[in-house]
Length: 203
Image (tube, rainbow, N blue to C red; front, side):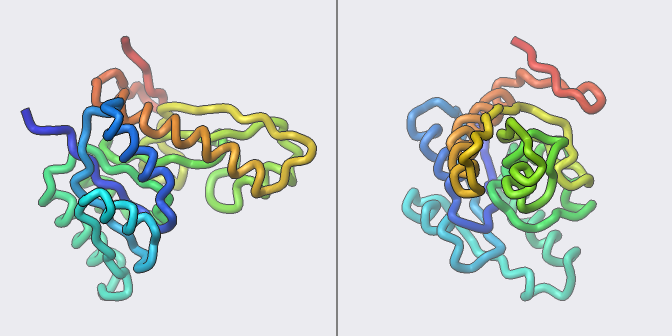
């Protein structure tokens, strides 16, 4: 039986990539990472992948004439690896229609807020400015609406009076490292069913 293969798309330091790697190594996640792709040349996430012997590549968007060409090249790279699931882990590009349709239902993302509250960027800053009492993280399927796909898992983190962006971000990130591998495990085990916008969890 072929292993369940992941592609992880990154742009930064790759702490969620590391959480996935660690879960695989501990045998908590019956999967392998077939490919790590970054759109940022010096992303530390690439170094993390290389240390594990995982194929990792920098694909420079500026090397392609337009977004469609870039995404087609990305599609071909991923398809060549027979990938079952694409995990966005701090990938700072909005994916286009062609990419999303090609891998429909097989792309997930983790976002540092309780969606649908605070999609997009500067999430902790906005939560603090709004006086929110709770924040957290959301793992969701990716569709054409930015941070708007069906929600798989959410973890709640309290916001304290003395929190700043850094302290809140750090507490949320700790939960991301637990929630993301767990969401992937649920998908591998076939325990999720999509019903409209809702993701139903089976036993």
